[in-house]
Image 1 (spheres, rainbow, N blue to C red):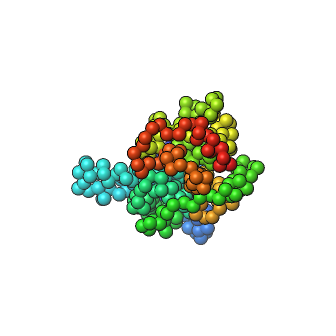
Image 2 (image 1 turned 135 degrees about the horizontal axis):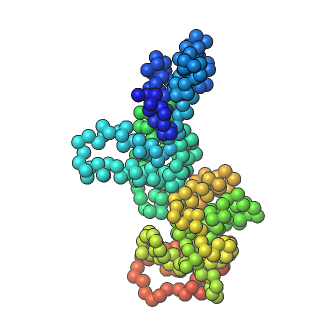
Length: 367
């Protein structure tokens, strides 16, 4: 039965069959490199056991006894599929509704991780990958007004899936899942970039050349608009207006929900942000349906190239820098909130500032 199961194209089934066949033959399955290091007598026993009467090797037996069956790489997505079976004891006695509520947060945690880091093999997940995922959550806590408990639940559920599969499949991996949880109040607001840092480092000739064009365009567009990264990623040619007297973008709920009703707004384009949109008049399709990986990609690039002013800075610090420049220039509170997409702490009267007036104000603080 083990030999028959080994005659398959399914890598996982083939590997499991090889381990079982080795056990049936009285040996423990070992990878080829380990087999080569065995004492000569045991090595010869294995070689003799795979030989058919005609003197030729039986390839299925060889895969089992000489370590020729390659252990399949289990991706994060595949780990979730395996988890439902491997953790079956946790579902005993649950009603259909309880089972759904138990599964959903684990599905969400894995989906979030894949969107940020990618569907990597478990063996390829690094400490930097986990820090990128944690960094994505730091910004999400800030932008969505969530508590650290939301992030901790994702980290716990992701860790449960990966650790269960690692243990039950006997992968023997050392997964970088420790020291990641958030303490209450830890997800503090990101500091703003200073104007000099933006001018002299981020906007220095060639500083962003290694960043993919769509991520670079969204980053530069953020400098003088202060939009949220996800808002920039979702812009299409219908929300990018470059032909009139005042170039501008509109943040609208097109194929997505906005953070709040106040997030719907018009932002004039000036400085390097206008140049970025002239280079990308149709928007940034690479991240339109997957904005989760945007911040991780940009932050990793900035970190590796020494472009973060401190270790607490991130891409989102450009949004805070934009607000600081408006405050320093004495922008009216309503105009500042309208540009930033924030609620006004009083009733709104009239239509607010015209796009022409906002353009004039922004040109004075443009980088």
